[in-house]
Figure 1: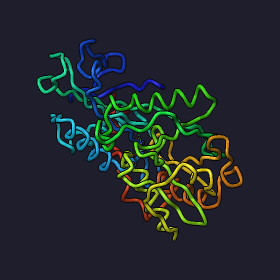
Figure 2 (figure 1 turned 135 degrees about the horizontal axis):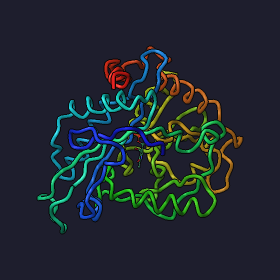
Figure 3 (figure 1 turned 90 degrees about the horizontal axis):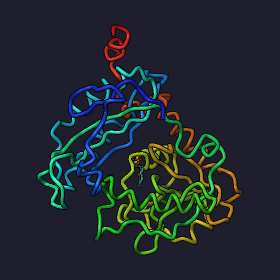
Length: 316
Ligand SMILES: Cc1ncc(COP(=O)(O)O)c(C=O)c1O
C-alpha cells in the first residue's frame, strides 16, 4: 500500500501516520463495521473521477442501517469529503476505503451505546487479481466454505465482520494453489468470489446468480449487466449450479478491486478454450472504456474531482 498524505477521520483531515484508534474500539473486537471499496480513475474525458460514487455512498448507508448504525454525517458530506481527500492527496487515480465502525466507549455485544466513527482512506492500488489475471484470466476453485447464509447474517450488507467468510475461502484457495475462490450459497448454488460477482457465458448468452443467491449487490455487477445488454447480449439472473461452471464457454468476475477479470479455469477444468473468450473480451473492453471515461454513454457514472481540491495541494 502506498501511503498518501492524509486520511479523513470524523470530519478532520489527519496525517497518514496519525490516523490511529484505541485497542478497545468496538469494531476491532466484534466486527461491527461497514465499508465500501471505491475507485477513482484518471479519466480521459473528465480528469480524475470517482466511478459510481453515489451508488457506493448509498450502499454504505444501507449497510450501516441494516446494522443499526446511524452515520453522523450526510451522504453529501461523505461524498464531498472523499472528493476533497483525493484532491488534497494529489491522487489522479486511487482506491478509496470509506469505513463506518463502532468506536471506543463501551464493550460487550450490545453495540448501540458505542459511538459510530467514520474514516475515509485513499491509496494507489493496482488491480486486485493482477494485470496478468485481467489479461489472460485466473484459476479459481470452488471453496469448501459456503457463503454466509441470509438467516445468520446479511449478505447484502458490506460489513467488516462478514469478511471472515471471504478470508477463509481466500486463504484456502491460495494455499491450494489457486488465485481465487468461488463460494456456493447455502443451497449449493454458485454465489460469488471472495470480493467479486460472477458471470458465465454459454452459447453466447450471459447468466449471473440472482440477488437471492446471497451475494453482494455489486455495483460493477450492475454496470457489467447494463454494458452487456447495451452491447446486445442477453443477460439472465438465475441460479447456477456448480457443473454449469465447468460447462461454461466463458466465465468472468466483476468488482471494484478486481475490475473485470476473466476466469480461465475452475477446479482444474479449463473454461472453453482456456483463454478469455469473445464475449468476455467485448464486455471487458466496454467496461474499461466506462471506467476510464472513454465512453459518453456512461459518463453519468463518473463523479469528477473538482479542480479546486487539487489546487489546495499546489497552494500548501
Ligand atoms: C463479497 C463481495 N461480492 C461482490 C463484490 C463486488 O462489489 P462491487 O462491484 O460493488 O465492488 C464485492 C466488493 O465489494 C464483495 O466484497
